[in-house]
Length: 183
Ligand SMILES: [Fe+2]
Image (tube, rainbow, N blue to C red; front, side):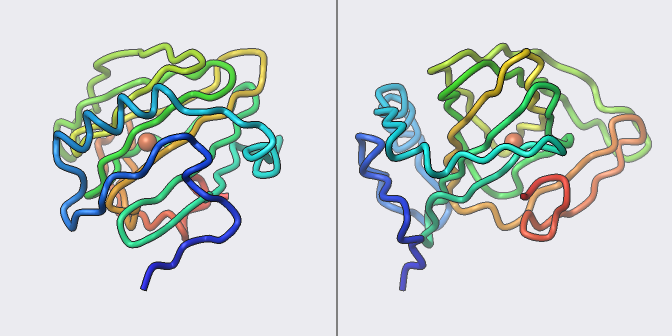
């Protein structure tokens, strides 16, 4: 029995969610979804009621959840950033729908070893980034204006790991319990 949140219909984004699969989307599903995501209809009449900003940190709103897919809307003020994290067993994709974000990626090298920075991706409006099982990153709003991003995960994010940059320490986190990841 799906546990859909009734307040948001994914169809308003202008494309259908791929069929849910136990292990997450296939590569073909991923390609199709990323192509569809680029055509997303940004209807602020629909998204607007879900926007929320909080000076103390970015706001994470869950728009939709079923057994296979989770859709989040993240609202960022200047200076807001995530913790350094991975995405557990979930595949994800992120579409910037307003403003500019920066994704800084890292490679984990083991406990006791600092993580290695591997890149800085500037993400403007309508740009997309993908979160694979290997992705470890910090997402931040370094601009002087608010930003909003849409995030899709499959399977839904049940857990992830947060990392300490210097020590390489890896901590299991359930997003619903995490102060820094969920609002
Ligand atoms: Fe992430």
